[in-house]
Amino acid sequence: MSDERLRVKLVAHGYEEEVVYSWEREELLARYATVMIEGTKPKAGPVAVDPEMEKARLALERERFESEKAEREKDRLERDIELLSILDTAK
Image (cartoon, one colour):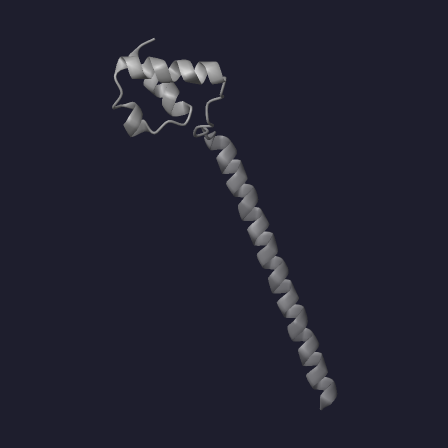
């Protein structure tokens, strides 16, 4: 395995990138051997985002926002009507 590949694997297992890149091959091999012996799993890295799925998610979020906005407006209008009704009966 190349030194670069060892570095990538060690960083994926949680080692600091700056530290890993300062190590020579012997240190890289020793640390990677430790990782293999411990049987640890790599840390989760950035997840690729599907642009179409992101568009669909944002559209759904926008619909939800607009629906909630309309509901708030409806509630406000109903309160206004109720207040006007109370004021009319108080005359």
